[in-house]
Length: 423
Image (cartoon, rainbow, N blue to C red; front, top):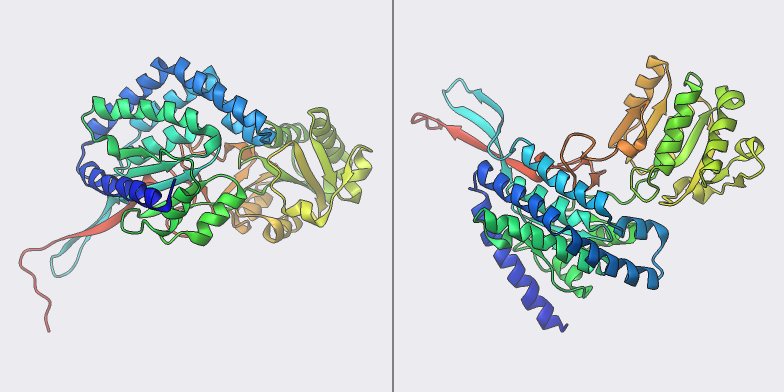
């Protein structure tokens, strides 16, 4: 598509989104929930169409030799399609944040001040591989009163279109404009560049969801605010006071439940005080599950199959069945390692010592910190948020899972009775 064609297409989407956002801002919770319920029903009714579209995407992606993590993110089956529908229903069941009063107070002069939640406006979502993001992002934006422009990856083009058609069914059923949820109808990469740099009159915030190169590009080129994380280099620290069975279960789940998600553990840290009891069993569990372990000299001694770790391994988000492992000097050593190499995403400590756990939870400055639980719980749905657009590692506006509340801002509503400010 020519540059002029891209400009015309994207500006048209932007103008339509701004118009739709003004409608959504005044739409009732009931109407939004009607649209969500109808969309979930359409997902189930069109399950065969969605799976057929995904099959064709998978064939093309396999032929293009996409890596295993991307293929896993792309793949849909009946269970995953049902999870999409259920997630939409979960979002519908959430409290509507729009119009809620976050705080209110009276001033001595009689002014009554309220801080009230409002939609952000128009949100641009740029994502790769995962077709479920089409549903999650579209419906979260709808519930929070935002219009959205979705730009999925070329590898999931047919799957995204099939799911988007279901969302349009929901909007139509509720009498809402189809432009509330728009899918960019071209895979031309120039559309991404245009969204980032040329749509400041239309888009209020960009949310990237994908690999490191995509997120880095968005953060570098975007001329509007960005909510996102660069990578998920997540850690599990096993303390000397950890129950060994619990430690084994958590470490294995954190790495191997799904290796291609951003909450998958990429580094295992073992307290030097429990090397003789905990290190060997955990390493053998991982190896037996098909995970490659790269370790420091002490970890290598635990099993001859452990490969030597390099400095780069401590920084790496593998998104694959690979984990780096290191022995550290207690909880302070673990905190120091995470501070040096981590990406401020998700970290977990396994210990029965409450004081040690609290020290870890207080000193580790990541978006999500857990005690005696797998890092795979780094997910908006698991937090009771219905779904998420992503996990933010920013320190402003939104941090952690980005759900309906995080897709709102606020304004101050001030009510008086004729007050004027004295000179």
